[in-house]
Length: 168
Image (cartoon, rainbow, N blue to C red; front, side):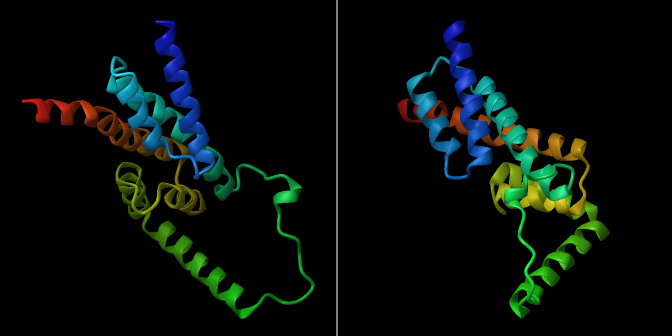
């Protein structure tokens, strides 16, 4: 029992860390875990990863929405010279995307839902975009939890499914 809780706690921690630092691959961790600890249910692994991923992404979501104030060293310094045309072009694109998301909130819901399951567009991107678009926290958490649970439950069950197909 304690070993199971330890593995699930570690899984939650790696999922949380991978949500904050995208260089950590939770997919590789999950495959490694289920091959080394096959007694852990795919359901528990999917739940631990979903909770860790969504809680970790909440930092990005809240910062993009403006609800989480970043430390001073993370803010851009004001420059005396006017912004470059390239910078103005990117700002105009971002403002255009934000306006479209506000006009069509169901698009943001659909994009975030697909991203949370499939990973395309990247979940990090749709997390920030959901914050910029003003998606409700409740909808962000629900969509992310359901999608991430589906994605990582299937991933955790896949080695067992493949072994069952190959051995029969």
